[in-house]
Image 1: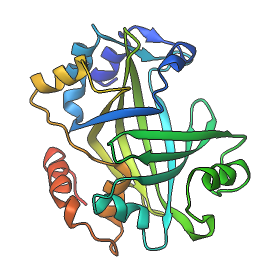
Image 2 (image 1 turned 180 degrees about the vertical axis):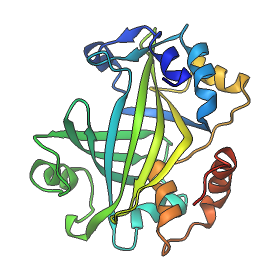
Image 3 (image 1 turned 90 degrees about the vertical axis):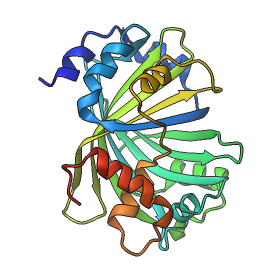
Length: 253
């Protein structure tokens, strides 16, 4: 067993029912990117302040997320070009729990993330039924203009501070697929995100500061599209891509 998993198992648990009081569907986000070798020490330092979501004794969940975009990647381009009031659209499956959602993430011009989602009866790659109703209600994006853009799988640790005021998600073992038979794996990469109703005190942010790990606004979706779709512009993401590549220096594209 990897060292960080041993430490993770020592964190105090929090149930899904308890965590539901910290949904944070309208929130501020802060992200960090670091090498997986850092994770054991980070979790050890976080244990004093956080509990970890535990379902059937599992301390992490497997995520399978399918993102949608237009044929010319307008949703990706909005992020690349720095537009506010932009969307991400995805189907997300919690694989251990066998729960499925269609989700719409909206980044406001006040730099807040607003998420709307609806639970689906089964896993699907098609926006239809109640998912289509949500799309039409919350966006002006015609469903017929959308295509499956990229699938992202990862494992996620979810921690909640003991005051029930913030969540920290830690994604690792990321892999990307753009619709062919090839999965592009990033075993060294970890992406952590601090989610709060409003920016404030955070033990996790202090831990990152103490370890000289800087904030990086990195979208897993945009990172994947920039790396694996040759037809899109990526100039504004090149610095972030190089930064991640430096962290994962043993990784080859």
